[in-house]
Length: 197
Image 1 (cartoon, rainbow, N blue to C red):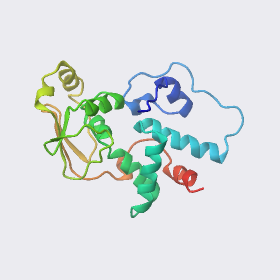
Image 2: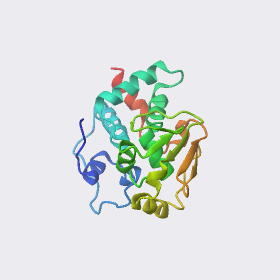
Image 3: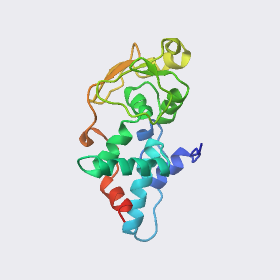
Image 4: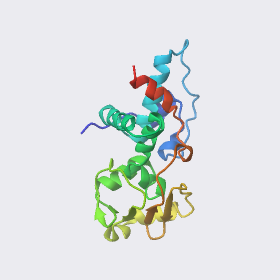
């Protein structure tokens, strides 16, 4: 399995995004890197694609698969693409506050701590549906890791399309997200233009 081992801050700086989108609370003390010269249209489209892939922790092959799926769905392809990424189980675990960072959320899912509708799901790319019940396994709730997460995220603000009970580490997917409810700083139209060439 391919894994991105890029330093988080360095990658965030090069893409011009805040580490907070990945769940990290620190900021760089250095100024963002300034490019010499003008960035081309192709370069801008490539950068937007890289931003989305980096935020959601998805590699090229899988991201292209999401794009192909988004083109077959009704509605705007760009919005569909971002919504598909947002529906990933590892992203939902992060949005619920059951993990501090997106990487930790992926690990929580990989290690089999998550139940979806009462069944163990250990695939981070699993796409949730409206009405799904998500919870941390009873055995896992008593671990020091999840006790720390509960304390740290007691006042965590969950997005509108999710209903969270952080005390019991349970949640419900109220509805599927809309693009307006997704706060990532990505221009999805540029990604669509990049892939449609």
